[in-house]
Length: 468
Ligand code: UD1
Ligand code: CA
View (cartoon, protein in one colour):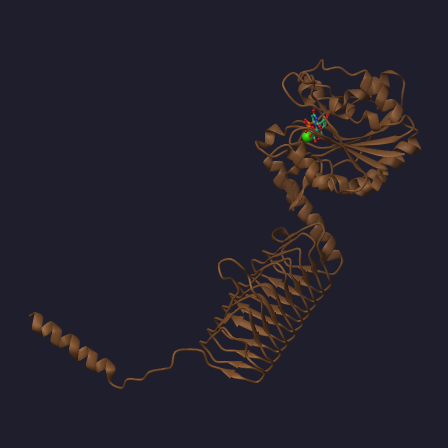
């Protein structure tokens, strides 16, 4: 069976964080997520995640992933440490006849395709163990690939254990390995912690196997970002940028116009239909789906939402909402969770919609709050309308039927039902149900006093005269 071990127990000291390193995010997903996704290229029957630092948090994030098992590496004063010791924790899951892929939780740019290539290299070369290597001039912290005079790969030397000559080697270990179950077990049984860091190095398994006469291979990818490890915040930023460009290039290949790919952040699970145009500043996150020929402009953030075709969104925040076709939103609108906008709806400047449905053709063009409401078709919600949904303890719902007109600066005090074609006059505070085709005016009666300003000015003046 194919098994996958992912090393994710390390402290991540260089991140200077209270959070385990592998939970630091790339495009709003933990870096470890990308490693698990890429491992699908190897079809593992089981994935064993080695946790240690922050184990509860890591388990909680990943327990729902398919075929996953957790092996806890004991962490603490006096405990052995190192990638080799981490891999040993997975041995109870490993059978001799397994093929075992070992990945590092901090190398998230690796792809499914490369892991497939590595497996083919392993099978075709008849190897007992293979690793992925790369050529780089940014060598700090990477183990170097040691080859004998005939060019055969024989060992990995850690940066801190290299002599000056070895330090100059530009082929580095990517931290990704494939061993037969038998050789992994045999190799791990023979490593020790006699090195600069006093750690059990997984990398030493290669030398052990090579010395025992097993065939080991290094699959050199040349210059690549795929093996970039994340040990610091600066490397995290670089990985975010690399992943962003990878996703944006994929979407552009699928027919999406991204005006400025450097400044457009789209998550790995986001789908965008062809002929949509994404302007700089957009952030599309989570399980968001954007239809075809939709335009997203300005500082817009869309999270876990579905947006239809031919929609225009300008400088707005949309969360957990569903938007139909040919809708316009913004600028500066906020769709909070469970806003459902059907086709041809218009949501304008400074409008907030929450847990509310607006059916086809309805409009709230300016400065409104539409919360806990069901709004029918072709309803006009005037400027400054507030759906008063909360009495300090409970939330209530309002229903506005088709073709109703809610005049500007009205309050709809829930629970209230406004019938079809009803007309609420501007400035009304509506607390009772309104029947179909009815006009309601619920505001103080206007009082008109002709010449009042002049009279009151005269009064003021005579007061002042008396004071002097
Ligand atoms: C490791 C390799 C190095 C390689 C580099 C590639 C070793 C000894 N060195 O170095 O040759 O060039 O990766 O990125 O393997 N971990 C545990 N338990 C531990 C220690 C680490 O689970 O006790 C995990 C970490 O969480 C991390 C991974 O193993 O996900 C790699 O550990 P890290 O300390 O980052 O190794 P590097 O120093 O980068
Ligand atoms: Ca690392």
